[in-house]
Image 1 (spheres, rainbow, N blue to C red):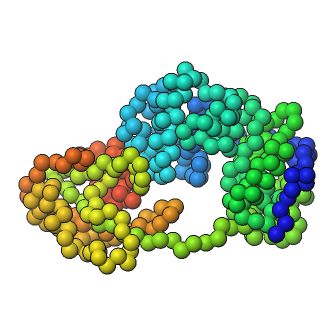
Image 2 (image 1 turned 90 degrees about the vertical axis):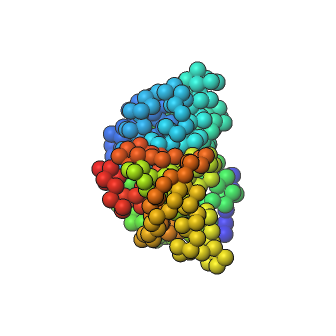
Image 3 (image 1 turned 90 degrees about the horizontal axis):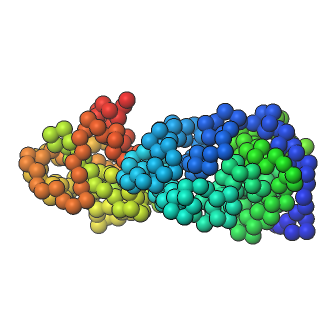
Amino acid sequence: MKRTTDSEILSDPSFSRAVIDWQRAHGRHALPWQNTRDAYRIWLSEIMLQQTQVAAVLGYYARFLERFPTVFALAEAPQEDVMAHWAGLGYYTRARNLHACARRIVAEYGGAFPSDPALLADLPGIGRSTAAAIAAFSSGTRAAILDGNVKRVFARVFGIDEFPGIKPVEDALWRRADALLPQVDGIEAYTQGLMDLGATLCTRSRPDCGRCPLQARCVAYATGRTAELPVRKPKKATPEKRTRMLVVIDRGQVLLEQRPGSGIWGGLLSLPEVEGHVALDDESVPADVLGVPQAAARFGTVEDCEELLPLQHVFTHYRLHIHPFQIGLGTRAETPAGYVWWELARIDDAALPAPVKKLLGQLGMPSLFS
């Protein structure tokens, strides 16, 4: 397959002009993080939008700002409070990095975000593309973005027939992104326009080529390959794992475990697990009720043990089969370190992963349905 060489990547002012004109006339202008130079709000939106759709972010964004209206409020907050307001949005490393980044912004920059993308990219959770977007929207800095949407637009428009995740291809895309930046003004509209094109017209499936301002120059459209480009990452079989969870309910409270700061559901509260996440076909670990009452006995005298309906949750790197068991206690033991009894009446305040919320909701806990 032929790769584009540096000498073939040329500046083309008509490209940025087409994107800018389209964005100003047809792009998105009413999102809550637009029409502002507030770097804090822009940064928060960019982190939340990483691998997450706008529709899913809107509610979280509003609630997060209500609780943490400034970078100072976020930096001063305890991490468990931050995680509680992020719970359900997924990719929890983002929340931990967000908190760490806020503290560095306050400690190193007095609460003012730098306008230099290189300085921004040195902060936790901010990569090169995100740094460029923050700098462009908050300070008008001329810097190139290259997120997933932009890669898809470039792959189709320029007919790039290799997987964009391969480093030589990605490097060439960055060089192209730099070369196509508007020369004088309009960096904000251009940056937003590339995002809008990928999100609203040049979508992965059923792209709306008839309304695209780049249709006349699009190689994928001209050759009938919009369904083939960008080239997808070679598929690997998704690993399957399972776990047994304990739903220990007693006197209007449920027992929750504090997850470690890193790893799956890092920093969140969750239900206790019998043996962690094991391979689905691991015959050395029981998949049924065998051993469950014994595992729950450290929390008190087990009077009831009922197997509940299983559910599944898909992570980016494996599928988890959850087998829950509801445990009724006669008497409680001393609560082990790392565990907490949580009032069911305020379960919405707990920083829980999405599948745990779903599981507790299926048990009829009313606050989870509100």
